[in-house]
Image (cartoon, rainbow, N blue to C red):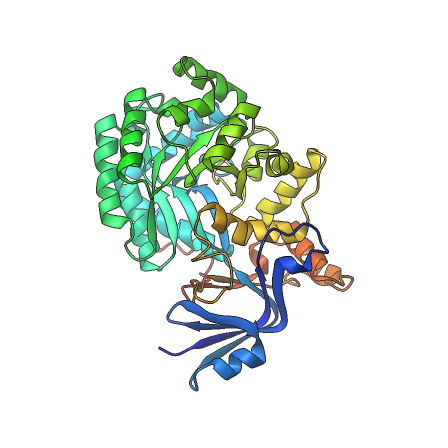
Length: 440
Ligand SMILES: [Zn+2]
């Protein structure tokens, strides 16, 4: 297969960046190249060196003066909520009952699911996101629709059908047995097919009976290498209701511990109101706390204490995510901008290198997928985003006064969005889709 050589300003992180002066935390080439073969990165470095290594018939794509980074990673998003985004006036439990569950009930119809899955992945790519950890609806066919679409695009995505058997309308409920049977069948059909990963997905403790949580435990025991995704400690009413439903549990986190669901591949959405004991439990098991700033602000859920979680005696593994449709934007740039403000309200600042580390390598590490995605390292998959820091008139004007890479990244994060995404490569192929075209 013909080599592809991308030319531009390449930026890839090596580790957590402590400050704007921590230049050892990343690799940057002013005139850089990414050499791609068979969907993988062969090498990244100075353009001249990459041009020497490329095959004689290599196709060079010149992205100068734009930045070339690893594709963004979104670690928590609900694909059936494409039409729930921007639903007015509720907190979590009311929002679920009024808007979300009725919309998710439509995914019983496989054709509807296929249409939304296609539009959803179009949106992700358009915003520079090349990997998501997605919740599907309760219906097996919603997960099939997602995986079919994801596989046809050769995207590395994680997804699972939600398990939920109570405290929701009939149209979005399964049973302990059917949730087990459907999950097993989906794992068999989709996990490891191409780049697809299955996540065992009990929605949260409120919508799973103890009998269903036992089924989740069985699945986690039978498939210990799979991701598990659920929600934890998002909203005060949610926490109080959860404790009523599981009165024997020490706290909310203890429920997931009790059912054997806590481990290094467990992704826990929100984790806003954790006690010290709960935070210790996350730290000790390696479970990941997923920060969803636009969602937490939109639903009025609370302020995730990113810097304290990161630096406490028993630190937490942290990921960031959009959580659309509770979240209000598909862009990881917009997400980290709101994250910056949440962290500022907690009296701290997040430096722009750390922000870009988080949405690339940091989120890949949180998914235990850093050997595949999240960097421009040789041997990893060629999932790449190209960013234009002068994409809008205001960005163009502001760029005239910007002198450093850190300042440029902060501008991209603070005012950038999908307009700053010039191109996206998925497994080495250009993938940026046209704006929502609905042929269905
Ligand atoms: Zn969520």
